[in-house]
Image (tube, rainbow over the protein chains, first blue to last red):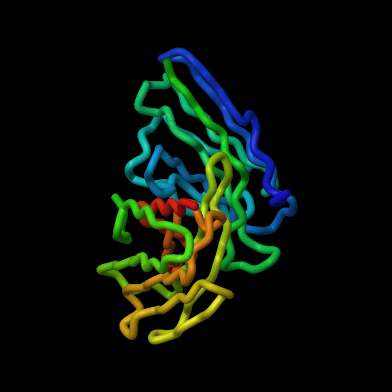
Length: 114
Length: 110
């Protein structure tokens, strides 16, 4: 147990549908990151939060992607009007415990867009 | 766009052999980390290097950070099948954002 829970673990959807992923870190008052990873590639930065404040959103991210962390604890990542190119693993990670400069990842949410 | 370049992209060796993977960047990071990722799981931190010229050892793994803090290497001695995985380097910028390289897929066969 990494202390970062992601749901759902797998999502299959049809093109044009909206999907939402949730991330529950073990503790609050830390930074929370979202990454996207495709097969054979490293994680690509999407966005990150300090408590409920969204510090940065990748310029590569279209307006169809939105993320929130309303109470500084759990976070959601929503993709509207999904496209086949959105198929990927979506990883959530937190810092803190063991350290502010250590990323602890969840197991990810795999999205398949048909 | 990956700011960190890793090489090689793929490496297949036999158990007992040594291997080295590299991570290079045109930017200076406040620190650099190595992670290992296994299928179906998120990356797990192996080590953090902070000081230029730093060398860290973790059992059979040796990590080096270049003097200019823009490149790093990971050397594995006497590889085992359990070393199989995707090795990722990550740079931490001054705002606390972690950027990852594309990774090196290492396969160790019996």
